[in-house]
Length: 169
Image 1 (cartoon, rainbow, N blue to C red):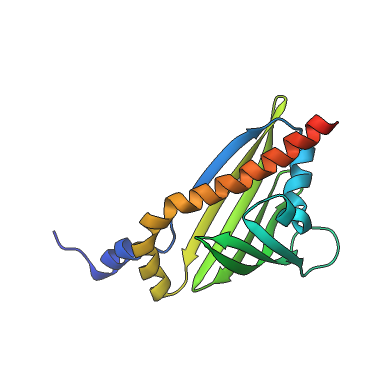
Image 2: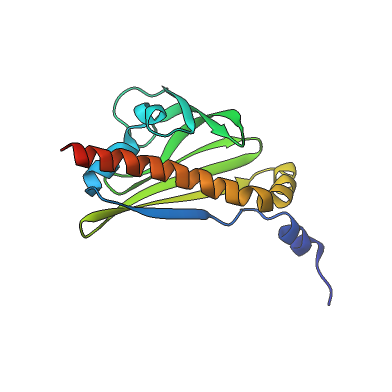
């Protein structure tokens, strides 16, 4: 069997990683969960991994909102300028950044389920350069669990905030 050069490159250096997903149940109404997940300005006080948020776009959060976020990633501070690329009020938003030859996208989605809300997160990374494709192929097996743990940590923090607000009422 003959393997074509281009298909071998596509296998070794994928153009997109498999999405990382996680979700959890929050004992709070969807409106409360949506309010917490879109209160970007105050995320640093709610999500332990986020150290600082600097809003770059004035006004209400929505499509095109930009902010600079500093968070602890893999034991180091990482700062990215984030932007909301997709916005479905009350349902979901997708924010992302481009850095180090990769395009990153994270979608947060809340869905009512009886008396609870399901909060789901999906993270995608698309390498844009050959170097990023190579590094992704080499490093992704090692980073996948750490990334999933970071996503889950963010969701756990939102859950804690929402459920503590419910208990205060």
